[in-house]
Image 1: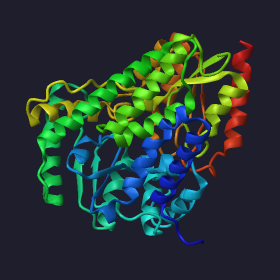
Image 2 (image 1 turned 90 degrees about the horizontal axis):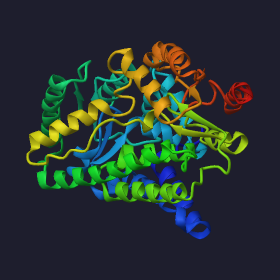
Image 3 (image 1 turned 180 degrees about the horizontal axis):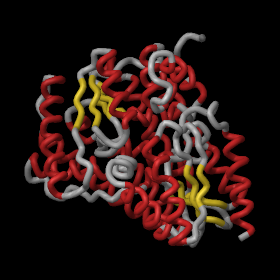
Length: 420
C-alpha cells in the first residue's frame, strides 16, 4: 500500500483549490466552499496551533466545543467528505479498519478506526458520543477511545422525546461540560457560549428560510447543495462562518425564487431522499437534475425540528436548549425512538415538499433504518400515492453498490414514474 496521506490536509487543500477556482471563474459562488476550506484547514493545523480536536457523533452538536476553543469534528462527516474525494483514500482506511473490527460496523466508524491505525489521521484528543441513534455509533466510538486511550464521554439519551427527557439530557450535558473542563484544564466561558449560541440561532433562521424556499415550485436550490449544507451545519454551527454560508445560500435561492426560476430550467420531478445521499458519488444528484429534470428537494439530513435557544440567561437554560437540539438532530431523532418518528418524517416531508417520488439509499450497516424502511414505503404509497425506491448500498464504499449500478436502478425507477 502507498504511503498514507493526511486526510485533513487533502480535504483542506481540495476545498481551497475549489474556492480559488471559483474566485476566478464564478466569484459569486466561492462562498459555497470557502467555509469548508477554512474548517478543514483548522482541523489539519490544530496540533501546530496548540488546539485540541474533539470527535463527536451525529447525536451531538458542536457549540460546546467551539465555546471552549476545542476544534470540533463530527466522525461521520469525515466519512461523508473523504469518501467524496478519491485523493483522500478513504477506501484504504476502510480496508485497514476491516482487519480488526466486525464487518457489520458502519463504514464511518470502521473507516475512522482504520484512518488512525493506518496513519491517515491523527487520533483526536477526546471523543464525545451519545447513546443514540445506532449500535454502530455506540460501539465504534467507545472502541476507538479504549483502543487508542482517548478520553471519552457518552451522553445517555432516552427513548422518548418529552419534557422529562429534555430535562434529563440537560443534566447529561452539564456533566459533559464537566468532562470537557477536566480533560482540557479549561473552564467554560459562558459569555463566549452565549455568543456561540447567538451565531447558531442566526444560522438556524436562514436554514428555516431556505427550507421554506425548497418547498416552492420550482425548487430554487438543488440536491448537491444539500451535501454542502449538511457539512457546514455539522461542523460550523455556532460560528460566523456558518452564518455567512447559510445567509449566502438563502440569498442565492431567494433571488432565483423571486424570479420563479428553479434549480434546473424545467423541473419535471420532485424527489425526496428518505435517508442520506451516498457520499462516494456526489455527482449522482446533479445527474438526476440534468438528465431527468428530477430535483432532490430534501433529504433526511435537511430535516430539522429543533428551535432556536432563546433563553440565554443561565447555563442551565442553555443546556436545556441544547438538550432539545441533541435529541432532535437529523438521523438522531429519526432512529432513536419508535418507528413512528421515522414514518412521520417520511410522510410529513413528502407532503410538505410536494415530493412525487422517494428514494431510500440505506447503508448496509444501518439496521435501524432498514427495519422501518418498508413501513415508510407502504405509508407513502397508501397515504400519498408516492412510490419509493429502496437501494441497499454503502454510503461511503462504492464497492458494495457502484455508482453505475445505482444509476441503473434509479433510471429504471424514473422511467416508470415519468411515464405515469
